[in-house]
Amino acid sequence: MGHQLEEEKIFRGPSEEAAKAKTLQTGSGRDKIIIRTSVIGILANVFLAAFKAAVGLVTNSIAIILDAVNNLSDAGSSLITIVGTKLAAKQPDKKHPFGHGRIEYLSAMVIAVIVLYAGLTSFTESVKKIIHPDTPDYTVPALLIVASGVVVKILLGRYVKDIGTKVNSDSLVNSGEDASLDAIISASTLAAAVIFLVSGISLEAWLAAVISLIIIRSGIGMLRETISRLLGEGADAELGRAIKATILSFPEVRGAYDLVLNNYGPDNFNGSIHIEVPDTFTALELDELIREITLKVYREHHVILTAIGVYSVNTGNDVAAQMRENIYSAASAHQYVTEVHGFYVNEEKKSIRFDLVISFDAPDRRAVCREVYDEIHALYPDYELQIAQDTDFTEA
Image (cartoon, rainbow, N blue to C red; front, top):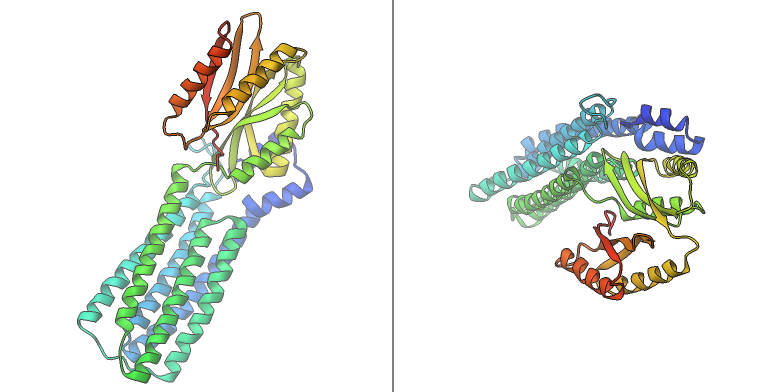
């Protein structure tokens, strides 16, 4: 969304289908969906918190009271989601030329912290009740209210998480996950109440402690995932393959490599890539081809390619073609070499150049590159070798 105005200037209006998809994913339509879903979450959680607090106080149940407090924290999470969505929708400015979309990741991180804090607080209170137990006084109406809360939270959690997945909102996904955990807590509280009524054994404090540990673990998982996104994760491999397939649909393009995607918020990507084209192409032909590729990638994947580099491919040179085949075969035989590209033979300068993509799984990537260099140099000692150690940023 941060590049909406720039996109309109560059592309002079995408196709109707692309425009609809863009609106759903990163435009005002997406924001409205997130805000509407969050408002539903706030209303549902405030309603449940009020009823559960009343039931907890009447029955002297620490588990039900903690459940009510957790509902209030969920309402706060939904409010944070709304604020984060509004801030992320701000247009780019001089200080933030790529927009403010990453604020959504910050709001998701805040929600994860709230979940973690709720788990720690719940665990502390549960331990206190284990040491100094209170005898609960359950009633049938109270248990029916708790049971109704379980159903509501299951439906709410599934709804919020599904919407979050659909519009790629980490904040909604985290809120939905939290609601699902609340349903488990409420169901466990209900089970403890039934056990107490049947046997007279009070397990709710112990049960609350176990559930608190589950919440803590979930909060840590949410926090770890959100921080990973803020640090900058590699692009989704499936998206990378789809973009390359679109570029390779142009008959003039012999190969597409070195795709780099920079994420500035959910579904807000800028990127660069290298393409292989015949060495007979003119500047005019390259200019037209690059513009067509940029437009098609945006329309089909909503990704702005800010730069497209060019590798030249030898044409009409059988010797160079055979050398390419030999070198590709030799390099690819190495375990951690995943790709060779950008190959070109300059007979006048007696030089060979190409890029060598080495997997992150290699214990020593430089050592692999050196091994390939020595092997190729032995095959063609009369040529100067220019091997660039490269990285596949979309490596799965």
